[in-house]
Image (cartoon, rainbow, N blue to C red):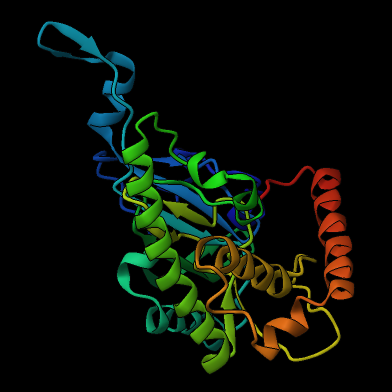
Length: 290
């Protein structure tokens, strides 16, 4: 019996074009993105001719170049087994929350859709997303204190560094303010702590690219962990506070009772222990990191 695509560690081009809801015209190549995640398969949608040029090359002014194909879009296929349309719609609503509090230039926009899937065990449904591709480098909030701002796009030109730093700080101010409003007004926070969930463009603009792990902010002494065992809410608030402290001079989160509760030293230590246990389980299960 064929394996359910939701259970596969990775997907190939042939896996995607074999899906009953994909019409293969030969125009596109589907290639696994290196950020293949815990919650969804992430596939690059590439122009087939650009992929051919990667290996065959093309002549430019008498020189053969081998340009890397740039994704046209990103295809996300959720691993979660849906029990009802309502469950799928609840996931889509979370994306609407992001769209409400962040501007289009602050996240990678996506069109979510529900499809019928001919699973090995019979007809089922899948939640998928066709997402904007964002070119950028990761923003690691925990490295900002050590000068990580200039390690994102190293540049020997001091003026270029100053310009980049100014643009990044302005973008960070807007981004942190938007996420803070989302937390305080809607009670949700996206996962901004995961590896490469935040990217920075060459113009210093912060973009949220993982828009599918949005959690409720629970005002409780208990530490919430998601279905994968990750303390996503606490780690995301910690990441937000770090960005605020090092890029915004602490103008957004300081003095807020909510953030002070989540940033209590004892709570941070407990969260760190849960975070370490989560990553140990990833290595033990040899599952792709997110």
